[in-house]
Image (cartoon, rainbow, N blue to C red; front, side, top):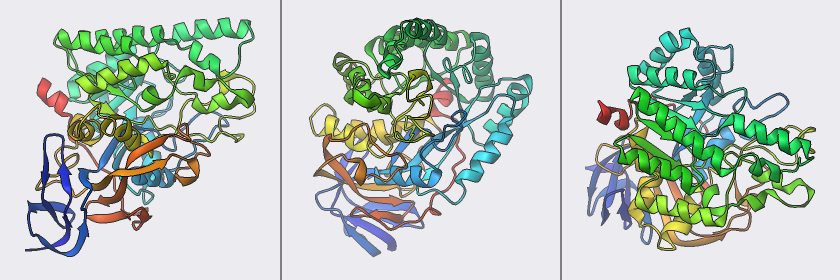
Amino acid sequence: MTFDLVITGGTIATAADVFKADVGIKDGVVTALGIGLEGAETIDATGQYVLPGGIDSHVHIDQPSGEGITMADTFETGTLSGLFGGNTTLLPFCIQEKGKSLREALTQYHAKAEGNCYTDVSFHLVISDPSEAVLGQELPAAVEDGYTSFKVFMTYENLRLNDAEILAVMDTARRTGALAMVHCENEDAIRFLIDRHVAEGRLEPASHATTRPLAVEREATHRAISLAEVVDVPVVIVHVSNGAAMEEIERARARGMNVTGETCPQYIRLTEKDLEGMNWEGAKQVCSPPPRTEAEWENIWRGIENGVFDVFSSDHCPFRYDDDHGKLNPKGRTDFRHIPNGIPGVETRLPILFSEGVSKGRIDINRFVALTSTNHAKTYGLYPKKGTIAVGSDADIVLWDPQAQTTIRHADLHGGSDYTPYEGLEVKGLPKTVILRGKVMVKDGALTGTKADGKYLPREKSMKVRRKG
């Protein structure tokens, strides 16, 4: 049999195995793993890992961000940036604005993505207005259409739900077999601290961190898990920033609960001190939960190493810094309350984890693949078409050079923001060639694909939910 494309000479790594073999690809699918395969096109991967394409299941692209604020990435720039970072699938959030229907939000979001994606995409739903119609009709219909995960917020006045509303959304997840995700921060405690800071005249970017201390995340994490326990549903706790919140996940699992943990690069490379600095530079690192301390880096690494964290996502939420519609908008220039929350990171997620984890001996290559691809696919209903290299899986493949080194610089990145929070960070291990469903999209660092190559993916129900029954 002659294949469309054969990858030879590399070392295949999945979440479970490491082995030498050729990869034979036909019609966009892996159809053989063996030795001596022949294809119409051959790529020599000698000295490189052959990995499943990265899946970043927590990104924000071109979403409503408040009056006068514009997110830095469209689907074109966001997926291009993700592609060059070694990703082949991104899962951004489609936000239901208050007073509007889910279907209206989905129609608008699909229109933004259509024909503008360098990677495959699939949407989570954000529920901000859980009306009777949404819970009883729209959400169940959306789940049947393949939107099998939705997120609720415990913070941000325009998004947060109270406990009764969260319970109602979780109960809808239980009835429909969807997976609930929760952003855990106590908004009332944050408001109390913000009022105190304002009264004291503390309006600088660093106050964003001190008004969102570890305790507000820990308490909300405990409460979100408790609400999930009341309803008896699996739950995903997103972007965990510290050891205390992580321990809430550990304790819940010890009680037999089905809790998925997620963390992000900012919690192993940034600290609250990065929100300080002259000329309002700290605004660049404003995100929620905020970065913590270097001592918390070690706690997060413990969770990465021992399995508390199932997925490592970017929480890519890009804004321009020096921009009237971004971080330095007219109000944000003088008051941390008006600085848009979020940092870019979809392109740097994989190099940072590989460099800090695999290259430095903290995790092995199998754990890297699990954290960045396989577990995302399993958690969000994409496995085994995505997230692994196996006969029958989509040929989403990254050729990874473990010896390549670079210094992260915004000038070399591909997103719409005007900075990277990781400027100057040296990393070892980089994606060189990226293949999406059998098409070479990036070859040796040069773009070969188009923004029409990515497609939207309806999803099955999560394996977490299926295991629950």
